[in-house]
Amino acid sequence: MNIYTFRDEEQFVQTGANLISSLLHTNPRAKLGLATGSTPVGLYAKLIEMNRQGLVSFAQTTTYNLDEYVGLPENHPESYRTFMNEKFFNHVDIQIERTHVPNGNAADAEAECLNYDKMLEEFGPVDLQLLGLGHNGHIGFNEPGEALSGGTHVVELQEKTRNANARFFPTLDDVPTHAITMGVATILKARQILLLVRGEDKAEIVHRALKGPITTQCPASLLQCHPNVVVLLDQGAGRLLV
Ligand code: F6R
Image (tube, rainbow, N blue to C red; front, side, top):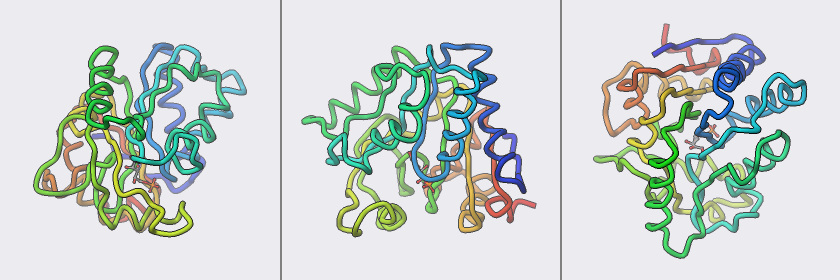
């Protein structure tokens, strides 16, 4: 695991963007696994800027998002499809039909999960999987517990996660209770993983995930089993690692 801590926000974002753009320079058809949440917003903005400057192209890229809320209309302002379109896809030269986000409104959610995995089996593995980290150690929406699911599945969101995401919704009651998420096995199949974490409030969970025991009680700790993980932290998030 290569862990880098940055004092400077610009460097933090630029390093992540450079990693993705150099992958696309080597392999313009590279498949990217993408994440939502507040952490990667600056990275997407940087990639948009680099795309406008002609420094990186997404024209041949295919993307697979980690997760989506169940039950929010696709065009709901807080759906992850809307997030990705607004924060990234609408502003770069990507072909929108090559972007995939699980369908949280599928009549048969179980079948949607199986199909998502089938598609990843057929066209994957992803070359680079971008991840953020939940305060409870979740990656994607793989919440801590006695056991974890390997493949894409429907998950009930924990209160801690719903509370953390309530900032994006009018009230806590409006936060969906369920989501579809890639499972940990799907995530760990990526050739490379890029984990981004920002903020002092995540210092403790960063320490548990990267230095603590590997346990389903902290799903991100499973990343310690992956041979090619790059972790970018701001100073706050990396505070307990020294
Ligand atoms: C988002 C996702 C989540 C977030 C995590 C951190 O697609 O899968 O695991 O990465 O909840 O969210 P932020 O970045 O908002 O702190």
